[in-house]
Image 1 (cartoon, rainbow, N blue to C red):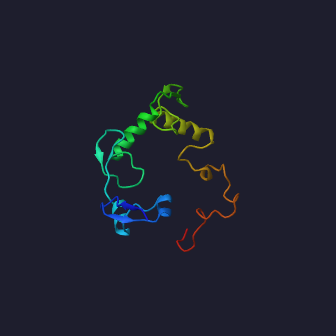
Image 2 (tube, helix red, strand yellow):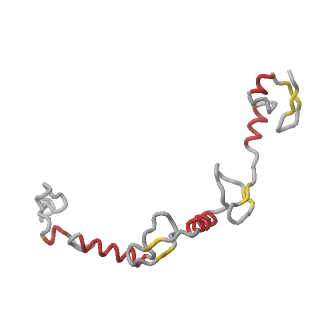
Length: 149
C-alpha cells in the first residue's frame, strides 16, 4: 500500500491503491476530513473587492448593498425600453419593469381602472352594476340578525 501525506495535518499514512484511484485517501482520519471542510475560507466581493468570509454556498458579495449595486449595473448594461404609459425610453432596474417612473405606473393603473367601468376604490355592487344575487349568497352584505341589521 502506498504512503500518502494527510492534506490537513501532514501526517503520513498508508492507503489502498483502489481508494487513491477513486479520488479518496486524502485524509488520515474522519477528524481531519471534517476539520478540513470547516476551515474558514475567504473570498473577494465581486463588486467592491473587499475580503469576506462567506456565510453560505454561492455567496459572491460582502453585503446586500453590493449585491444590489451589481444587479443594477447588470440591468443598466445598455438595455433600453420604452415606457408603456408615456412612450419615453428608460433603463430598467429589473427585468419586470414596464414604466419609467412611479407616476407613469400610477397613471396606468388609474386608466386601467377607468376602463373596467368603475373606479379603483368604487364598489360595483353599490352602483348597481353587479346584482347581489348574481353569484349566490353575498356573505359580506347579508343582513346579520345577531347584530340587528
